[in-house]
Length: 100
Image (cartoon, rainbow, N blue to C red; front, side, top):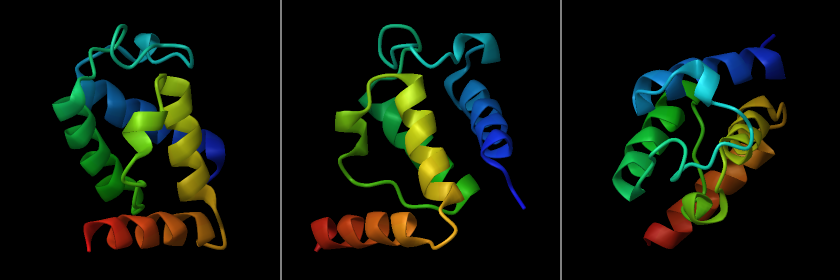
């Protein structure tokens, strides 16, 4: 079984590679824009990678609400670790509804 710690480590590795930053920079209070240089295009590309690697769908407006790496980590781990799948299903449903 995958633990939240395992998910956190996988996200850290993916994020470090995708954003071209050191894993040491990926601290909970790191600002996505100011500290990690995540602009809107980088956020879209990073989000697509996260969805592919973790098998989840991030809510369409998730990048409007998260401003730190810790918030991203909480969102991704929460969606990926939900054993009932309800968090991921809800994200997929809202994502699909907003595209229609």
